Length: 297
Ligand SMILES: [Zn+2]
Picture (cartoon, helix red, strand yellow):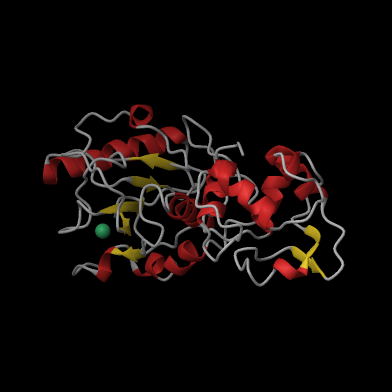
């Protein structure tokens, strides 16, 4: 799991954590709203914890299995864990065993979701791909499958923002979860090696952080479509310092240029199929992004 949510203990859960274990990644992710009072973005953590307990009481009285949703996001952008990701909740009737839920605390038929909350939901959705849910799991609104207004028209209109991840780049700092601060700027795990991935790799390798892989052999561009933005392709390449540092780490020739030898060594290190190319939605790049999000290469 890549996004830290405040734990059940932190907000004071009193009832059961769903009703049974779920052993496989979800197939879809559903967005809901709680239709509880919409707190201010500057609400305190204690006010949010109190609303979590109120939400738990509602779920308990309706279904007897504690709080209904997996993750609850407040207008502050702080995320809380409701039902654990590997336990079954009671959120999306008929699908609770195969989907997971992100609930916006408040009423978004009448209020508008904040960018902070949308960004957190986007982090949760993208961070969970290939982990909590399958990489191709769609994000949908509750109303797509039930006769309900949920998640409210103002939030439903913003689902594209959550899907696109557009709020994730340049996001200053993730609002801290009360118990364990979320890491700022988690990478979207999408298997595409662009400027954001390069920037994080540059940070890890201690080279200048500009998101650009300078002067790379143009001859390898076509065979590796998973190398996307920020790659400076050159017919007479000089190589990049970041690739050179990466090669040092991988113990291959240090010429600073990406190519089959370096890519194969990277794939071996990451434990993915070794074919010397970076395909679109590359498994190796997804593994790299996961590791960078966890703060290691
Ligand atoms: Zn709903």
